[in-house]
Every structure is written in C-alpha cells, then in structure tokens.
Image (tube, rainbow, N blue to C red; front, top):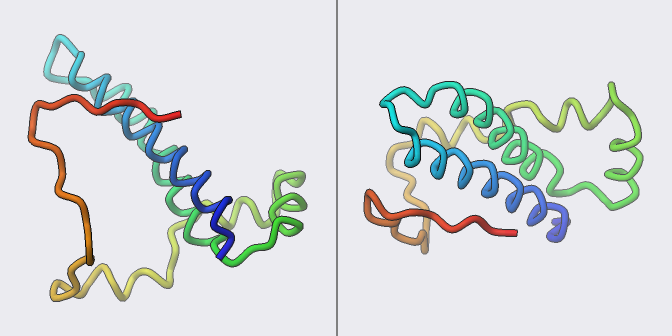
Length: 110
C-alpha cells in the first residue's frame, strides 16, 4: 500500500468533511444545503481516490496527475471492489473510534 499517498488523500477528505460540519454548525438557517452539496463531492473524490490508488506507485501517481483525462479520472470513481462490504450488515469495523457527541465541534486538520 502506498501509505503516504493514501494518508494524503484521507487528510484531504477529512479537511473537506470538517469544513462541511463547521459550515453547517455555523449556518444561521436550517438549510445549509449549498455548502454541503458543494463540498461533499470533494470528500467522496478523496475517499475514492485513497482506496482506488492504494496499490499505485509514486511513479504511476505522478504520471496520472499530469494527465487530465486518464487514470486520475478513473481513480475518483466509486470503488467497485467495496460493494461487497456495503451489503453485509454483519461486518463491523474493528477498533473504530467512537464518534464525537452531537453538538461538539470538529477541529480542522492540516
């Protein structure tokens, strides 16, 4: 696994997710849909990319990032090899941290 690349993608997803939470918590009205819908695709893009490129070498990643319509576009798509996990309600993640209590604010990460 290309750990440094995967972590970079996960940190980016976390950043956008933290922004969504912060913006929704700060919204004066109950809507907040604009920012939510604008930023959520970035969360999915980075999550999908982290999974789809976990086995890519630095050379493959560099090459794909220089091309607009090649591998990097495919890497953003939903990972089809995860579908098996989405339908199995008996599978529970191991050692997952507890989510923060509702109403607590998230801190943005670098």
